[in-house]
Length: 342
Image (cartoon, rainbow, N blue to C red):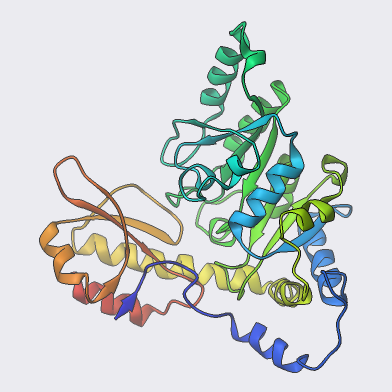
């Protein structure tokens, strides 16, 4: 069976596995206070051009979102997100469990627009009873979005300006960050993200790591007692070097960006092949997530042959499915997929 279900189905990049084997019997300090975590954090600071950034390694995306948002804002404050945002749709109320209401606004193919944010804030502040409501304090976006779309530098700048206008913080979920940075036409880099975001994370789980996300706080004074916050949320890994080793490897000699590019290259190869087969695309995604529309008959034919994610039904009764490539996807696997979809 072919698998295009998600981008974290493989264990880890071979370089990471080799590194683990080579240090297997080393004794390392616990809780992330080890030489590998220190080295990885320094490499990330250098890549972000942010020498004072606080960098901590966590296990997964939901955990990282929960810790970061709870550390950024007070207990009575709320988060604004697109309705398709991961924290709103697929995290089982993790943010609300911390006491933070998630306020959802309509997005455009997953992207939250600055003008939408401004309209909401103007309406909120004009309400004489707004003191009775959860107070918006941070804006959550994903890069790339859940629809595989990416924000341009101009869009992020406008969003940041809107956040500053209303004293909101900007937090970026980077679960698939590598794939966004690797796509054609991307004019954003890590150093730019560090200049506009109050916090963001660099996804490892979906981009070559066994587990792990790197949370980056460009200005450490934005949060208090981050390690204690992590501990409170059960997010401190005793064997912290397991995450440190992985990010130290990924950020050596540009490996993170190199393997991310493979996912985008194979996705574009897939997209070209699907176009030749006259498939209709639900939207235009330049990243490793591709969304196509298929009939019930075609879906029934491939369901036991291809792993995919069902997205939604179209108005005319067809099906939107998502096909995802990863750092490990090979063109030969895409060829097999295209042959099945003929």
